[in-house]
Length: 203
Image (cartoon, rainbow, N blue to C red; front, top):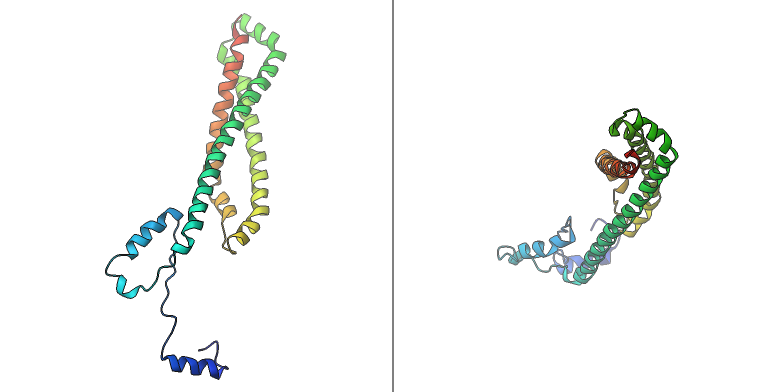
């Protein structure tokens, strides 16, 4: 009525109908697409049937199912790609450390001859591995943050200008994400260093 206050024909039509022809409406938003069947089951409760005329979910059920399948495929693909790059990173780290150790093989041999322990010989290479990990994490943080800033507006428009919150999630969980990544990569690089130095520790 407020929107059409200057349209007497519309107001007259409403008077003829004698009430609100559209009825009440409740919009329920699920946090996860898999929650929709549970919501529909709850709405089918007999105590709600007298006041619920229609549930508009079936028309979107196929779309939601397709989105779920796409999400699962993307998640699986991400895991497989991550494992593939993890394997490549491991090989690269081992070969890089082997080259570094090879160039210092005479120094390592001398250190072993004068009684240096394996831990003392490995120490500088372990520190170097951790340093390279820190540099790599720093580069990935900058690149990922810039990618999120550039892609988030497009993703928001794709979801009907609904904010996805990727950048804010990135900032809020920064230490959890990259702390865990730093620990995992550091352990990987240190393990690769220990493996690569075994050959040259035998004198």
